[in-house]
Length: 362
Image (cartoon, rainbow, N blue to C red):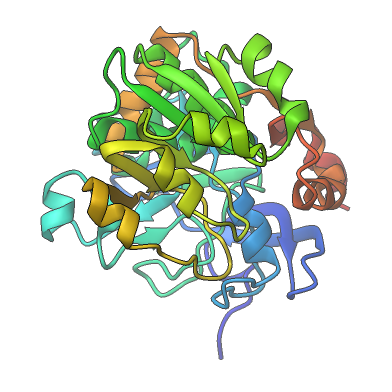
């Protein structure tokens, strides 16, 4: 007979979980494995809320395993290390992003691209090497192999740095990989949400000219004055869109709703690249003719490998890049999920786990 989540492992843990596709989160007692020779255990202080969490708690992708503890933008302070750990020590500030395991022998793993490993193990809602379900950062404690631990520089605040572990690397990685992280490039960011707003910051730090592309005119002042974008394009204004055709080197599309990509392809210069990082719940239509006529490219990009994630965090600390956040207590979680579904957040919710979780453990 299978052990209960509370008895599965020796170390007691407490967090918030969802029990079914209603998506309703509530307090949950479970357990974590003992600290292995190469493991790092840390007290969770903050955890960002990602759009993925919303999809998974409601089983919108059809793969959710309940009970489910979400959270893959996890930061905190090291409380214990295994005797073979060299990367960090007790008291260090660290984070864990979207993955905690991979095969470590395939071509992707050998190239520091663990996120594309066929045997990737996600930080939550997945099956770990030992056959148990992985639980995320909406919890008091976390343990992971040191390979998956990201060191946080002293000058990067933990709360506003947490979302970079998913949102940050999701934008940083394609900018670098597709040759868009170069001064003078004209980069479009479609959608000004949790992903888009950090995309603007990274692209600007790379020296690009950045245009925010949005269906919402009320994002204009925010994009230009607060986030420092160079220009704003209202995607429902046909005149504006027509005038901007053929002017972009690359566009990062962060929108997770179904939308037409033809207008975005038209904005690209010849040989331009449209990189999709948002995850719509239905397939998008692919117009081939404009791709052929301009030798244009449409690509996708996930998060990033561990080496690049550490590079991104160090770059963010150096350039003072952090997410714009609304810090919430954990008992506000269900309300926050409702607001996130409506896009009512500027721009990322972050749970103050360290100061609010214990009081919900009755």
